[in-house]
Length: 158
Image 1 (cartoon, rainbow, N blue to C red):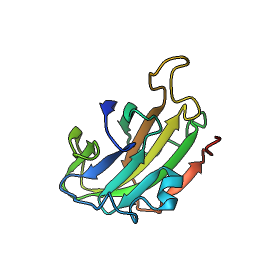
Image 2 (tube, one colour):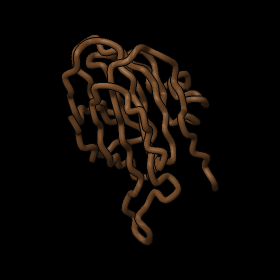
Image 3 (cartoon, rainbow, N blue to C red):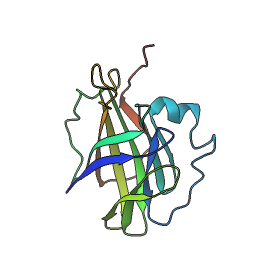
């Protein structure tokens, strides 16, 4: 199933959450230097995803897969993976900082892998306009837990 991502958030981040999880997403341990460089923070039951545009607009899609996509889209500027355990049977996409639920997705309890693709990070606005151009694709599938892993790293070039 594919879910469209088109919502406003704040502080250039949004969350993937096991329903009912309350995390300390505003502390420096969650958004460590490593998490900021990897563009993905995590703790039990919650992942934080970085958004590049200054308007904190999230555009893209989320897809639930049966198995891992063996051919990651290397056209993405940045690709990162992490694991999340679902204990509630419901995965939520939430904004920041109010934790409004954007999508609520029923999933079988268990361990999942989440892959986040970030596109157009060097050109986050449509040329000549203040319209966000960065896009995000999230793939989720059942898998054994494993550490956060960057498959392709984007380096900021200011």
